[in-house]
Each structure stands twice: as C-alpha cells, then as structure tokens.
Image (cartoon, rainbow, N blue to C red; front, top):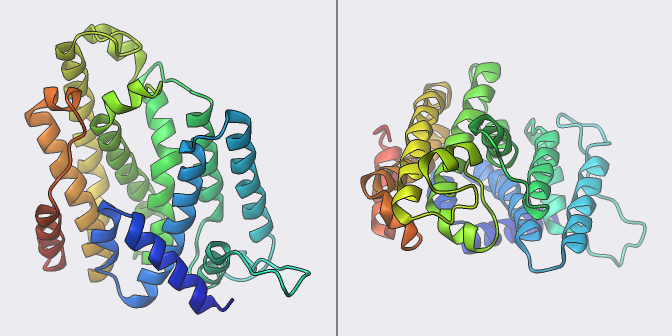
Length: 295
C-alpha cells in the first residue's frame, strides 16, 4: 500500500462519517486536508471502539491495542518523533490509517501524545465514569476534544504556537460541551451521564437525570451558558491562524455555536430528541467562514 492509497482511505472515511467536521476540512488546501483526514480517521476509530457493542473487556482491549500502536509509532525519528509502521511480512498490507498518520507526523508536528489522551478519555466512557463537578467534566472534555484541537493545530500551524495550543484546547471543550448537551437524553438512555452530578441535583434533575424535563432543561441552560464562555475564549484562536485554517476552524465552531444557540433558545427540545442543523445552514456557515465572517 502506498501513502497515496492510505490518504485516500482516510479521506473516504472522513467523507462518509464526518458530519460537522467535514464542512470545515473541505476549506483547507489539499495537503492539510489530507493530513487532517488522517487525524480524523484515527480519532474516529478510537471513538468507534469506545462506542461499540462489544463487551467492556473487549472494548478496553481494543483501546489498549491502539495505545500500543501509538507508542510504537512515536518511537521513531522525524519532526513528529514518528516512523512508519513496519511489518516483517511483505504480504501483510499496512494499516492505511496508521500509515497515513505516520506520513503526516513526519511532515507536521503532531502531538501524538494527544491521541493517547483521547484513548484515555474513551476508556472513561467505556468504564462509565461520571462527573461530580463541572471542573471534572472539563477534564474529560479536554481528553476527548481538546486533544483534537491540539492535533489539528499541529496541521494548521500558528504564529504563536504556545498560546494557540491553549486556545485550541479551550475551543475543543466548547464543542464537546455542545455535543453533550445535544445528546443528553440519548446518552442517559444508554446509561451515560456526563453533566455534573452536583449541578444536576441542584437543578432538580437528579444525578441520573431521571427528573422532570423542566429540571433537565434548567440544567442544560446552566451548562450551555458555561459553554458560551468557552467559545468566547477558544475563538481567540482564529487570529493566530492563516486564512484557510482560520476558515476551517470558523466553519466547524460556527456550526456548533449555532447549534448551542438553538439549544439555549429551546432547552426542552433536547428532552424530545437530538437537535441538528440542516445541511443548507451548515453550508451557509462554511461559506461565510471562507470569506472571513466570524462565527
């Protein structure tokens, strides 16, 4: 398998499985689009293992296998401290996602350790970790979404890398909080509760979110207003990026921010089903981002 084949496989995964992410990634130049597709493809794999139907021990073993691959990948040289996955048997076809990621990390300074943090965060999902306080929840969001912000920044580059990494992490928290609010009832029905137990009890929703819909809506408003503050901070990343990268981030964050606005306008809606933006609205946000209109 050639690197070109590997990147084509990652781009196919991104086209078929990415939703809001795809509207931003298509605004990048081809090299960055290919690189970010490799990042997305592995992140998707990790997420799919964590959300799969296998028994808990098998899912944990699957995540541990990915963690081992990442440690092996990071054991080589190059700008990202990465080498291509090797195989002793030439008849064995390399893993296209790991191959594309290795090639990407030789070109861009990807923080491979962020992928390991993502695996750790998905393990928390598998084991049913719950969160007593909002700070506890933020820690989880940094693992499963702030990491993606930092990995993406490795592809984008920045004129102030240290400050940009903090802001990319903050923006990832904002996006993940929006995801959690959108899926609050769906997750609860699957036995997953992310919203802080202390806040849930204070709002009358109960730590298990079994309380009345109005109490859940009040809890959603509380967390949604906190998420707005994370957007305000995280969007400070935009001026630190070049035009194409700025458009990509503005499109993705703009879509999620509009979704959060919709949730806050009608918080009871999340108790009735999953909210989403229509495709035409997402395309409109992406188009505005490309011409430099802030989300």
